[in-house]
Image (cartoon, rainbow, N blue to C red; front, top):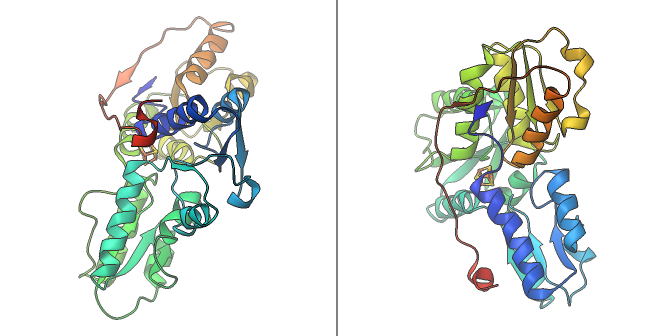
Length: 305
Ligand code: SF4
């Protein structure tokens, strides 16, 4: 069992924001986009009265709306203000840090390269902080090799949930081509992503198979599967819940590695261990490579809710 694993401070805060908003405003509270990328979490909040929508225009102007942990383009709160809506921004503070650094670079006249996955809501949100044309998106080393950047000062930023190792390769290529390019003040890949990948790396070599609890939409969960494979466990896969585990395909496995993405609650891990116990004699060994004590405050409007 990889430690740390599962829920992160930014995701836990975002879920709590929806719960507090329900307490304060009553149901329904609308949430733009999945608050964190996990079906189990979304369904639990739906039962309490949250309504998940893709876009702001699906929210009646007289109901509160929460923006997800991934962050939103500036146009979204602007539109909520134009419609006089009550909105609560659950953007993870570590994503907000990337937004404010991008803004700072633009003010100092730098063009920004954002390393990330096209279409992921965090990337859409970060690109939407600045006017079109201020940010170039680079997804992999090949693109880093070919991207044409405007003359003048440059800086790079990254999505918070990328593979630490793949990002280092992309950055190396960018800096080789543009040696003056400024790095972030502090790594943009967040502590939760970094720690979960390190924990998977530490045990994957000893595992015959590896399960990562998480959603296919969850960038950091997908990265954990890749990290497990690269660290020596070819039979690594993503599963949403214990019910999705194909036990037949694990026959002969004596050591099973388990981790969970930053949006997956611990109960999903425990249910998977319980499901294994129904079939095998199980001894659980947890390998903890880092202890986390990160906590973020709630937005002021909800602190007393
Ligand atoms: Fe914040 Fe990292 Fe969690 Fe994303 S994965 S919500 S950046 S702590």
